Length: 376
Image (tube, rainbow, N blue to C red; front, side):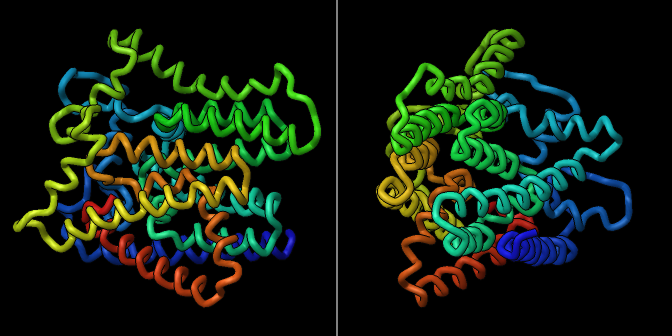
């Protein structure tokens, strides 16, 4: 294994080990009632279940019971199928559903970071790739790559893999991976748009003429299309995943109240706790910071990556009522970490300050998540 790759693997392993240790320790101190939907019978199972919280219950239900849809009520159709399908496959091999979800996230998350550094090295060299990998490993919401039972790690692995293959000129495999990715998260337009623009830009940079085959990235939407057709066949509502967002408790109905973040402003009141205030401000700050990096990304990495990041950040920012979850969603906007690494290369003190602050936030948020706090 090359020295740079070995250092990357070591770094990722240490970050994951530290974060997992924090979550397990906090979970061991927390009360059993705080544990999420998961229940296991083997001794000390709760130590692992610090990773199984909130949406983990939805993924487990889909993996074991399948989908159902009740108009106007929270339903599992809001969650795309790729992640729970893999969990179901592991369950068929005898692996407990929640253990399967945690292990799937861990394997995909570590693989995604390693592949990310290879992609970054391909574009900007090994030294910058190392810095970018470190920024990703220590990103405050990177614990979603180390065990949290959510689909973000799988999605990141797929999208990084798609762009990595695209950079190597392997268009068909890139589109196939991207099609699986659009069955994991409802952001098909961002991925299709980014791949298409980057493919055309890639051909132009090599002095090659565009051809009919360069439009192949539009087929990356097949994952979304298949899910839409399934919902239409099963429930008579092809866009049930979008309509269910208006259900009580989620309250994210498309419209001006969501677009202009009325709920976010309403969250600031006299009864607001310090934690609620930090959560509201924090996710909004991450969103605005990511949007501020769109133009530098386009300048340094190309219009394809700029287009991808703009759509990948803009879609959830617009559709969220209060920016909640944006810190986690930004993991998919992986070119931002390379852009930030490039911007910090000439500012070593600032770079170390960013890394130290990020590491402290990562451990703090992982501890809060392990204790059952709603942080993202």
